[in-house]
Amino acid sequence: MNTLLRKLMRIITVPSVAVLLLTCSVNPVTGDRELAIISEREEISIGSQQYLPSQQSQGGQLIVDPELTAYVNEVGQRVAAFSPRKLPYEFVVLNNSVPNAWALPGGKIAINRGLLYELNTEAELAAVLGHEVVHSAARHGAQSVERGMLLQGAMVITAVALSDNEYAGAIVGGAQLGAQLISTRYGRDAERESDLYGTRYMAQAGYDPQGAVGLQEAFVRLSEGNAPGWLEGLFSSHPASQERVQNNQQLVNQLRAEGFTGGETGADRYQQRTASLRAAKPAYDAFDEAQQLIADDNIEEAERKLDQAIALLPNEARFYGLKADIALMQRRYGAAIDLYNNALLRDDAYFDYYLGRGMAYSRQGDSARAREDLQASVNLLPTAMATNELGTMALASNDRSGAKQYFQMAAAAPGDMGAQAQAAFLRLDVPDNPTAYIQSAVYLDSRGRLIVQVQNNAPVPLANVTFELQGILGGQLERRPFSVNNVPASRLSEYDSGLTLPVGTDMTTVRGQAIVRSATIN
Ligand SMILES: [Zn+2]
Image (cartoon, rainbow, N blue to C red; front, side):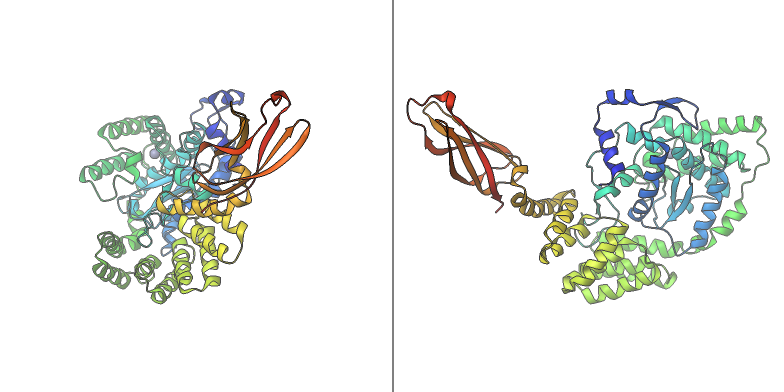
């Protein structure tokens, strides 16, 4: 765990009293005085550390269309130039059909291609990006960390459904922070603040602020139509409502009164610069249908849809990647590797292709290639599946400490995979550090018998627990071995040592302890 993350975990767990020790600062967007635990340098550091894994967990960048990302970044920078907070703003387009956009602390912003389909003008795009700029600039994400609103230890499952294991896409390690930040709900005040200042910045940037109202109207229409992915997308955290449309209309009227008239909508430019994305929509629709068909277990039809998608947009890596996932699921490892190679030829920066190919190599017994691929996938996005497999491979090559590190990461995953990884970790760590799991004490009962108390703090029963009983009896140090074959999990147990002190012993001269020497797990 890096030091920043450690500090954040501390922040999450410190009692609120600790906050009083911190200094007051002025919110750069609202001018309000507030407490800031996380410094600007740390905000920027969180953003830059979490930006790539968060992109990965949401489908990765839309690298098939780099000009589209360049365009979105242009519009974003034009609006962000009017934010009073100078941050290293960055804007990317993600390869994801869900209509969504998010911002991390420190100015790192992303918009899904699924949302770009729903917009009609550049002013609407500027309204979305301006809104996200404010989330970042006004420290909404940083505040939710400071207020301890993120769920500690909560597992975030990525959209990637690799193989038939539902936890394959569980994010582990430090990347969980970003995954939580991008799915966090900021609350109504923060949303109103983002609408308010975001619309102002876009008007200052020369856009017609009416775009912000058009955007909200489109959201209301879409939420009424219950478009697919709606609830999981932008509008789970940004509820669309007539009230919000009216608030934004009032804001636009006020901006007009302040002289912001004659701004551009940029409708033609938007249509022109997103033309290739719109042309590609049938291919992505076929891909989305294929994913649904896989979930419904209709693999044959899913493959047909993917072939259609490939015919329509042959350069999109994801289509090959999903075909490869199917082959892996069907244990056709050679075919899976060929298909992952096809995906990697088109996009060598998406974790799932390395993860899948690594699993296929591992199943083929090629551990050198498997290790290299799985590690590459972890570098992009650490998942329970990759770390668990790397742990198993490290153990097979007698790398005990490496195996422990990987299993410990994977142990955070929910369900069977997490439980298995935890068991694998404990099997290694209990013999290495028995005293970390076992506390022990001795006492004499009323009949003079020496009783050993054993507290097992491990979540599993321990076997072959050996102790050295030490006692000072009449000034003499006595040592005796003592062992217990099975100590129940997570509780205090008592054992008769079989030793009894002679009747009449002066109890004030007796001192004893039980020192843990070794333990294992069956
Ligand atoms: Zn928002």
